[in-house]
Length: 224
Image (cartoon, rainbow, N blue to C red; front, side, top):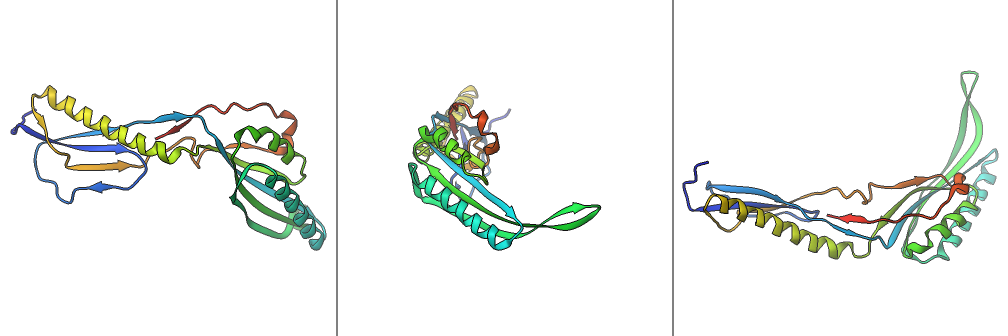
């Protein structure tokens, strides 16, 4: 590799999930482009839940009343736990006709009603007790649970700085091997990273299998 200048300007690229900060103009000078990565493992301390309520019957008014009763019982149960009340939300409240196939034809089979409910449990030790309470309410199922940390924002900031330092150290090491000096960075960019324990990652379970409940293993989540 031919280096025409004693100054090698590098591009730092830190893996993180925040805004992009770049210099407006990049001169045509020799460059070293590197990518820095850092991650932090931490035990989760909160859990995001999403539940479904479903029931059906043959009289719409009775189905609606029954559904309202189930949702009320569910809300009363959840509010007794240590939750973030600002996150408690009911969405996608629906009811309509239920049909089935019979002799190659779609026929009326009563009515159904459904509601989704989400909230954040602040005490992770209440997980199993809440699981069993939910299992006792007919018509309720768990759509997803998602481990998270109240320290996530702080850790993301420190992890991002570690990624930048990692990128800079790489650039200095590479320039040293070529016996040249490193100047100021031309561009600092951040790339979105995918957190396996983020919103996209869930543990799924049907409450109908409540007899199989066992103590959970929380493990660690990774902050990128």
